[in-house]
Length: 130
Image (cartoon, rainbow, N blue to C red):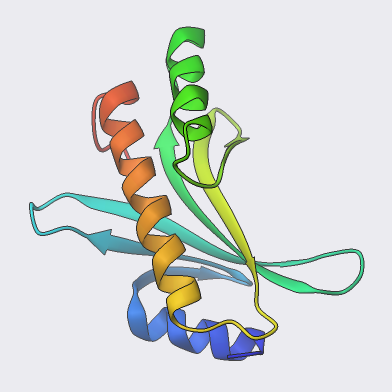
C-alpha cells in the first residue's frame, strides 16, 4: 500500500467501519469476551507533504490528576503511542507514514492502540463509555 486510497480500502475491509467523515473514519474492534473498542483512522499531512495514518482510540474523561498521572506512567513504561486530548476526552494515538506501509504495519498498531485504550478505559474510567 502506498496511497491513501489503498489505506482506506484496507481499513474498510479489515475493520468494522461505522462512520466516515472525510478523512476521519471510525470503526470498532470486537473482542472474544464481548468487549469492544472504538478506533479512529485519519489522514494527516505533514508540512513537507508526507501522508501519515493516525490511529486513535478513546479512553474517556479521565477523572483526576492522579488517574492522568497513572495513564502517563503506564504509557511511559513502554506501552505505545501517546496520550492526546480532544475536548474533555483522552485518546491513545499512534501514527505511521503510509509511503510503503504494509497491512501488518496497520494491524499491529491498531491492535496495540485499541488494547491499551481499552485497558486504561477499564482502569481509569470504569469501563466502556464509548
